[in-house]
Amino acid sequence: MKQLRRLKSLENNHKQDRLIRGTAMEGRVRAFAVQTTALVEELRRRHDTFPTATAAMGRTATAAAMMGAMLKGEEKLTVQIKGNGPIGQIVADANAKGEVRGYVHNPHVHLPSNSKGKLDVAGAVGTEGFLHITKDLGLKEPYRGSVPIISGELAEDFTYYFATSEQTPSAVGLGVLVDQDSSVIVAGGFIVQLLPGLSDDEISAIETSLGELSPVTTLLEQGMELEELLRQVLPDVRIMDGMDIHFRCECSRERVEKTLISLGQSEMEQLIEEDGKAEVVCQFCNEAYQFDREQLESILEQAKS
Ligand code: ZN
Image 1 (cartoon, protein in one colour):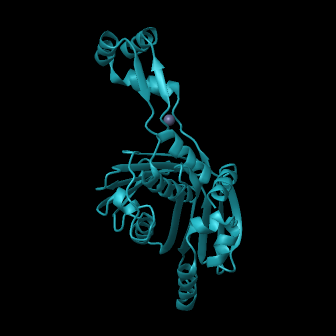
Image 2 (cartoon, rainbow, N blue to C red):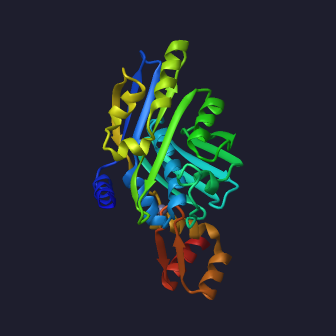
């Protein structure tokens, strides 16, 4: 069994992460499903997260990927979860091109399993705090929406966000399955959104199927395709389009240099004098950018001008 899981995990990790978008009930329901196994494994590897932290970060990044798919063109968003648990802040960025990145404040959090034998995500995140969404829609001011954390398991918290902040009743499923060796076996999720015009019967039919649905990770581990997953909830779902999901960080040496320049002349002079070198680590991808004395001096020249 363990060997089988390992093989399954390897197979899933080599599969390109995909997201699909569909509609059902004559357009009165819209739905998203995503597989994020490779993305969450990459986040785990980059940030060296322990299993409970991997699950919390992975669920957040999975929700962010689907919310990114709700945007268009150059729009992008940031999900920030600030709970009172040991993990601290969780941040995930996503855009309309399927690019996602993220980090957690304390990656080395692993807690005993909860009463259901699952990774205790609520224990790591905390059950008090806020879920903040910031959307850069290319307008002068970004859109900001916030709701209090109501569960800490995250899927419920995103459900609450959609209902209260975006006035769209939604069902959100998020899951990350972690192997004995801490690597990610599967990760993914779905969002089903109810648009105006649904009858009570239609709503209760959706609620019934959602109630009967196995956990996302169980379905994905069985090798279920995303379309089939949505069909379990929405028998008449029609897939509109799909896209690949990737880890991508927009940091670069040029951007880091700009940040150093923005420190100003006196800070730069102090840095050169005291350390003679600098290492700047990108919070989002853990990439380290090294600067020697000569490079710092050239940045100092630019800071002066
Ligand atoms: Zn980066």
